[in-house]
Image 1: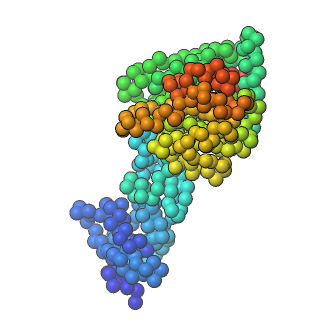
Image 2: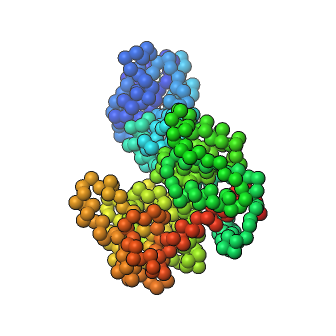
Length: 153
Length: 306
Ligand SMILES: Nc1ncnc2c1ncn2[C@@H]1O[C@H](COP(=O)(O)OP(=O)(O)OP(=O)(O)O)[C@@H](O)[C@H]1O
Ligand SMILES: [Mg+2]
Ligand SMILES: [Zn+2]
């Protein structure tokens, strides 16, 4: 039996699987799972995985992800698979994908960038590399590394 | 294509168009020298917004527009007038677009010209934004090299001084990477070209990084000098210990090739000794003068005057 199933079985909700070991916390913060979060959440941290050696798994009951949440998750867990569970069965399953254009949810690391000023625009980046992840600001052209992205997500 | 379009970054101008622009600049340069009146942009209005002080860039844009028979409206202190009232750059530009045919902007923040382009129905020319781009300076730098050395390909170009913060250096470096050139970057370790800029160019051109001007000076066709500001150093003794080796004097100039040139974006403080001015290799005042025909050609190609 799949070891991750031992964690718990949910009736309806979302499973975020194949998250790199230890990155579940980042995913939870993206999903804003905090003391006010009302749905049950089961978390497996560093569970054994055939493909990844170790992985984290997050299962959120009665919740389905928005596009921007999935995009954010792609930066902390580029290999993650998202499964949508309805009545104990997986009805949809897909892999996250790093977006070619990143609009609005990452702050440019350059404090002098016009996208950080009080102007009616969202931040805007282009994906320049997938491994290692690197994006470039469409305004100031500054590149951001994986570490910098995670700090500004 | 330049006609009707903004120039925010030097990469907005293709290489063919750049050479077309240089030819037009040559012809404007001759016309101005001969005192010929040009009226090709009669009836066109250029608006300038300088959120940061500038003498040379601003005057040369205004002079270029007047030379073409166009008119200029400008806010003398853009900073005090609109920013102080809390107006966004986006709103300022939307307003300016309805008052003019082309807008020239200098702004202290990186990427400001790109933002302006987004909100303007008229072409924007970036006259320098933050530590980002300064494409018209780059154009006149390239024009100067081409004119003084009759071509850019095959040349060895040495950039000296503050290579970390200077936007003219970054912009020029990116532009030169489209040519077949060799580049030497000479600076104190603290003031090297940022890695993210090097990453963009190092696969295309041969770059040599050194602290020592003597390593490269005798082979250089162009010595591009920039100022090192004291404020960049936290430690004054460190500044004093390095600064001397980055000052260009007659002795250094005399070790350069006969047909080489010394350039500087100006204003110069003490990084080139005044004694060098008389050397035929001192090209920096000719370089500054090139700002007029180059900007005339750019305005003319964007606004479509003949
Ligand atoms: N009803 C359920 N409740 C909770 N978790 C579930 C449920 N059904 C499946 N899962 C979990 O969802 C994930 C995907 O399920 P699936 O059966 O597709 O896994 P798999 O065969 O291991 O595929 P993969 O190649 O993605 O690892 C697994 O982590 C699995 O444990
Ligand atoms: Mg599995
Ligand atoms: Zn930016």
